[in-house]
Length: 264
Ligand code: NAP
Ligand code: MN
Image (tube, rainbow, N blue to C red):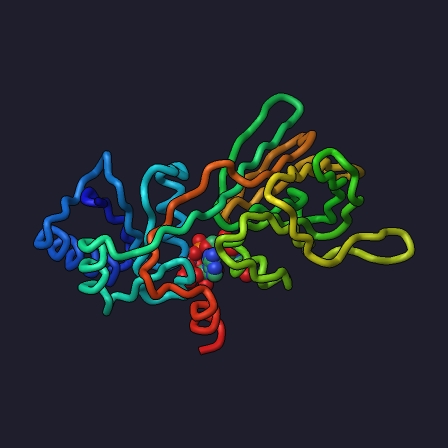
């Protein structure tokens, strides 16, 4: 049973208020609120809060994750503030499902060093100066294309409804473990030929990007957080072997969430 819980509210006053109520209710129902060795973490806020919670737990795959939405879009935040008591009752009754969520492992090798990142939504690779990015793309070592354009995005199924959607990427249902490569403003003319459609890959493929031409310094956006990295030799992105464990209520239905968040 998931008895030891830590809350991750954002700094918003409403979120802190919800956290106070939730704390009391959880304690009244026999749960304990702890700062370490917890088995369930609850983000309170929007999608940014969920991303932040996962990141501050270093993508720990032993604990369970869930979110309570407050105010903003909250696509990743399943529980509404009005549903707190049924949520606690379901936790108590162990009446919920578990869904395994992929994240990305990113490795950047420069002239002198290697850097490692993880992300839940997406990685965006651009030229550091936001000028045209020239990237040779390889899939499991096989050359795919010379990308020329603003940049390339590699998103997870969870991230498919975020930045990826704004770049006309496909929505990928949770439960499919894959990476989607989505071009950002690809250039096509007499000189350059770039694939302008998103590509969805099997989960065992490694995407390798090699900067060429004038591209040497990279701007890497990892779940929206900016990293400037110089003299990049190559970047490798793959699906995590291990998965995050998300708690879902029994009536959780991805179709319904898409309808609710994007069309209502
Ligand atoms: P933010 O600026 O608040 O995020 C932009 C929007 O993306 C917000 O409405 C956010 O929801 C939503 N969002 C985030 N993750 C989502 C997901 N998995 N599915 C559907 N919508 C999602 O910044 P943030 O809250 O720190 O989130 C960082 C993310 O913002 C990045 O990973 C990137 O995906 C996204 N982003 C999108 C664009 C774009 O579409 N042009 C540009 C930059 C960044 P909340 O309001 O609930 O937070
Ligand atoms: Mn946000």
